Image (cartoon, rainbow, N blue to C red; front, side, top):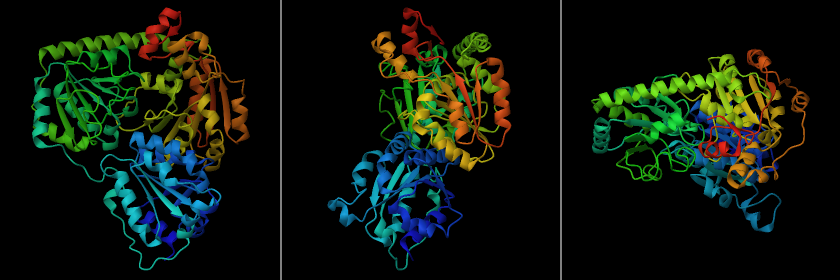
Amino acid sequence: MNASKALLEMLKSYEVGHVFGLPGETTLNLYEQWHDYPEIVHVMARDERSAVFMADGYAKVSYKPGVCEGPSVGATHMLPGVAEAYKASVPMVVLTSDIPLHLEKRNMLTGIDQAALFGGVTKETITVTDPSEIPHVIRRAFRLATGGRPGPVHVRLPMDILGEEIDNPQIYAQKDFAIYPGHRSTAQEERIHAAVNLLTASSRPVIVCGQGVLWSQAWDEVQTLAELYDAPVGTTISAKGSIPETHPLSIGVVGARGGTTLSNGVVAGADLILFIGSNTDSASTAKWTIPPLDTTAKIIHLDISEAEAGNNYPTDVILLGDAKATLRKMIDTAPGKSGPENASRLEAIKKAAESYDLQISELSATDETPVHPLRFVKELTGAIPDDYVMVVDVGVSAIYTSTFFKVRKAGRSVLYNYAMGSLGYALPTSIGAQFARPDSCIVTLVGDGSFGFTAGELETLHRLGGNNNVILFNNSSFGWIKAAATFSHGPEYANFATGFSDVDYPRIAEGFGLRAYSVEDPGELGPTLREAFALDEPTFIELRVMAEDELVPPVPSWIRRAGGLGLRYVG
């Protein structure tokens, strides 16, 4: 069997339906055989980084490993997407073709040491040196990508290897690893009992969910355990959807990227914190101040990764295992309780939430221009269909949706990239999500800074079609950096290397063939969103907003300084 055909047979055996990639000369042997595999759809991107982000979106929504491919010349372009996947634990198989390895030291065009490039941002990088090894390597790649803590695996395929023949290829899949999670490990029994005992003794417990809850699909177990102990539940920005945010025990997002004085206050006042699937990073803990490193609260940390469980806080009980399986065992042994102290605490939280929601509701009704971000969230909430996937760039779009957009149904419906937080994520990622959920309304929130990285993918969007709606927040700047400079070094530094010239974004979108809108009047926003969401075609909506140093978003450290500088803020 031809080696490229063996590779495609392996992908077929793992039920891979889509591969996201970009053509190149070193991949042509593979493409020649691909003609015989129409069931494996090749989705052409306009940039290799975009292809990886597409695989990211596909994996997050489908719970199958995302598969992407690129030529040797594009391998370096793939690194930002692979780094995000590595830090965010996204199961992914990254295929790159390459020059013949015996020419690597002779300066053949496009050749570079790919193994060295990918080694630091993958679970493993594997170079195929013998065509007969391809089936074994692909089985290993899927097993590593989906086993334990998931992540990307890189497979390097020299072009000459792809053109060779294999005798008696061992074509079979380990179907356990065609999805995530294929295997669920549970924490040790004695540690589960220790965790349950701490929960039972607690009078002010709180649960903080990280993205591991979504990967494990453990939202039902989170809600059941929370109800057993009347424990408020907060999530990191990347774990939004771990509990319905309309649930009485939900306090929304916590930390520095979406947390509020209310949600962060609940965490700070807890006498026990159960972290589930969280790496307790700087964003989700406001640089380890929520809770502080010297907290007196008891801490239980449940995680699939021994590298993350107990990594940043003194931890009373470490639970190493799959979130869903381990929580189910905890629930089976938990007596549950809700003492009078916790009942009065929950009533106080409820009253504080009602007061906060009233304040936000008043701001959301404003008719000011540019459109206030809270008015946008209100109109988006009213217009978005029940079946949606929202993909969000860092910046204005992320901070306001994470804080104020309430996910009504548990599960992953909102995708962020706050593992690395690089620009240029949402547009390509939404295309991958669209292939995983083709019947859903896709809502893609893009900053004008990010758009400069991925504008070419509007052609991909138009070529592929479907109900994908790009909403661009235009503040004519790298607004987040302006605000960071303002609050870290002073307002006089805010405009250094951050401003853009005026750009007609709707005309750009129209040039790529998309139906485009520009909204300046808040009263037009709701009708425009409903019209766009109802169309079975890609749309583009420009929304002018204030930069983050003019209207300060809910970032705790920024808000503390905003008042002293006389700046408006949303807290």
